[in-house]
Image 1 (tube, rainbow, N blue to C red):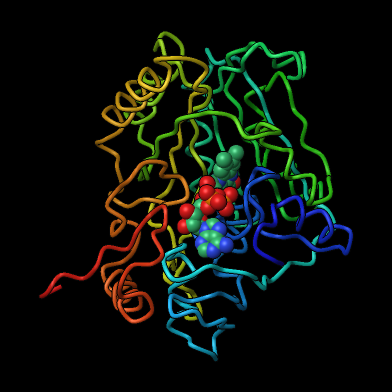
Image 2 (tube, rainbow, N blue to C red):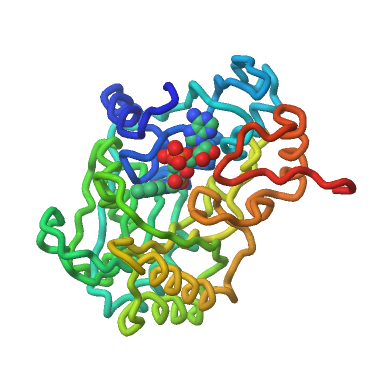
Length: 354
Ligand SMILES: Cc1cc2nc3c(=O)[nH]c(=O)nc-3n(C[C@H](O)[C@H](O)[C@H](O)COP(=O)(O)OP(=O)(O)OC[C@H]3O[C@@H](n4cnc5c(N)ncnc54)[C@H](O)[C@@H]3O)c2cc1C
């Protein structure tokens, strides 16, 4: 696919051919930015980060060459682009591996947010034994009272688990049993085509002004759950639209010989909180809540980061292994020594001695 394509441009035609792309939760996120940064899809725990499903990349490099790079051609550049983001050139085309999938068992389970602690506790335990075939997200949501939001959710405060299971309905039912025992008031899991996963998370249909914050977490202890709910659940005074934990592990956590610079994500859950910036002062107010959430969760900080979820400048080296970051710095020095390409998450130049 060519640069500029959004996930809907790829996932829908792929689906028509009986194939699934490792698309993110939103139909209008750019395939290139998402894929170069990592790419956490609803099939991630089975098939890994989208960046490691890239098979070739065409780009214009800092010296003006149009290069097609893959495992055989300029392999260092190919390695660096896969997870190293937009630091190495302007990508014009990506070649991606697709997966033969015609249907997945997917949907959401919803409870009132008063049950957040109990639901997160059961979900957190469930994630420790869930098979790689299922990838889920858990969110505390304060749904705005907007007319285009379906009535059962509009204006409500809820806790939601959504996700997708790669397999048939009987297998999916078995896997979800422990979560269903919590008696969700809404349960939409059913067999759907993979392209329909673009609507699963109910991300806004158009870009909206928002401010987000991220932290990578280790295992969810009872104390971590209490801190999470106290920061974003009932009684917290939170102004966040969403406080989310994405289930990691499985193939997302495993290294691979053929992987790029972002080999794996080092953490059990990726936390992402976001609020809508609807007027003057809102960005600052949301920033204060996000700071409070990060402070509350600091004892369980895995110390790494997933750069696609980091919306503010951070020390990018924490997102990679030490060895990978040094190699990224070396590739940057070789292909773009004068820093023509300034990505949203830059690779810092190597200092002498590093
Ligand atoms: C609603 C929403 C839902 C999301 N859901 C998910 C999700 O499910 N999983 C997930 O992993 N992430 C998700 N994300 C995060 C998303 O992956 C990042 O925001 C990503 O950076 C978006 O890439 P983009 O191309 O749309 O944005 P852009 O801002 O256009 O690009 C981001 C960066 O990518 C690089 N880049 C983009 N295009 C090129 C190019 N042609 N050549 C070179 N470099 C380029 C640049 O460094 C650029 O700064 C979501 C984001 C949103 C807003």
